[in-house]
Image 1 (cartoon, rainbow, N blue to C red):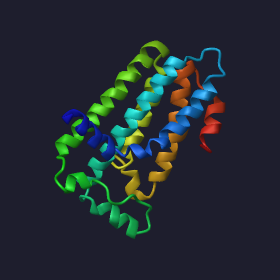
Image 2 (cartoon, rainbow, N blue to C red):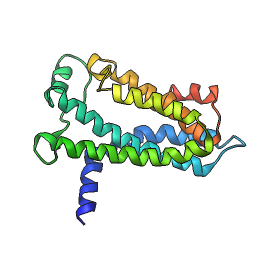
Image 3 (cartoon, one colour):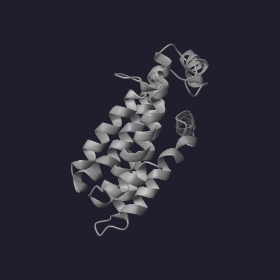
Image 4 (cartoon, helix red, strand yellow):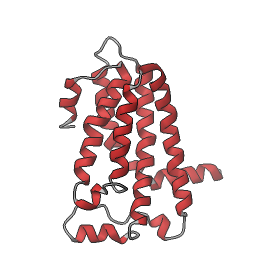
Length: 191
């Protein structure tokens, strides 16, 4: 029971309610890939599972960077300055419910689960998925972390659009059918 309680705690604080933000484009990409002769439902499902855990990991990592960058007040300052910003984050850190070390451990565990699913895709579907994953990870970390801290400069929504649009959908499409397509790029922009 104690493990279930901890897992629930971290899934809640990783903002699982934001998962539709990544699941919708992933599912659209799976349906688009299903039209290809090389489509594999198994690798499509692996990609979706990897995305779920990567999203949870990045949400926790975002909390870490926010907490390290002036605690939780930075988001309030950004919102007051006109930059759209989610406030009231990291309460589990400021209240003492969890430590920074526990936060980083939880984020790392979610990332390892994403890596686990991604490794199967890499082995079978090829190195293309690695490039997409590395680019996406770079932008995910740079959202509120080093080197760019995009969300602190009013560019967070652009980065999120890039991650959850062209990068995510191209990655799922590639993992599902081992190819890239201009079609998936064009439909990823409005999604």
